[in-house]
Length: 393
Ligand code: AMP
Ligand code: MG
Image (cartoon, rainbow, N blue to C red; front, side, top):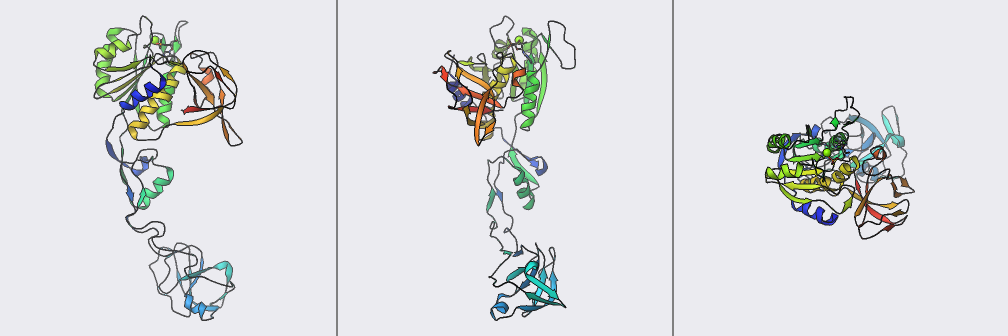
């Protein structure tokens, strides 16, 4: 058995570059950029009025003029006009400053009567209320860097530079496989000795949340059936998440079946609770996580280990934060203890509120959970107020 740190390190050594693909910007939110996004022109592209009002030439103001005949209008979307010296033009937010105009005075500081604009402000400054060409970004400047996860704001940047198609990191093709003779589908009525599947659907939900696509499979606890099913799945996918069948039960055939198909085991079993029996392996095409079937174990192993692999493979930062334990916890075993927690924010401090319930089979206790707090193996008493790492869902 290895430690949590060793397991994370091994997973890091087996992260994969998934390659790159071009997609339409409307599907790009949350994806990882695989190119720099450059300004195709200066930002803003012209001297832009930032207020509705009038525009004048500063030298007219400096020569003492305070009222100006209105000789035209410069609207947003209209080509640049020329301001006649000694006069003003009305100008709207977003319009190009006319030639000769280097001051915009907002309507609030002006009275226009009989075609004459009288200015009430005491002073004006050069380029007042004008957003100068190229002051946000020069042409060719990097606006969003390669490797960044595309945000809502980035969609606006992509479109403003005309990047309708964008190069992003490919996502893995994921297969989620439930195993177990006791499992039936959610729409079925289980017999007294059966249960409905749940944890694979929680996995689907966790993947959906991050924009990952997947296909679902089910395999019964028969070695031949498992081998046959894996044969096809191993060649069609590059990330496989199995639930169940990796513990010490007499029908836990998953490790054996995977290895017989040439998937190399990198580790099996970690000094932790829950999720001790986690199996991790790969070949040159596919990475496989065999999660123990208990619902809390599955979700813990996904959040800690599979998320780590995904983040590293996509070049993303980790999904961990630190939070303050909201209560004392005593755990004397020499195992890392992952406790599922709610994470209320109390006066700016993230508290980790334990939802321990009745152990790793207690599905209902997951309802309020937002992540798992990691309580280290070399300690037995964890005090309220101490800070520990939390793996977010
Ligand atoms: P296993 O890891 O196969 O020994 O399963 C451990 C426990 O988790 C057993 O009680 C299983 O019935 C349960 N289990 C396995 N797979 C699932 C699943 N997809 N949804 C809910 N419970 C499961
Ligand atoms: Mg099972």
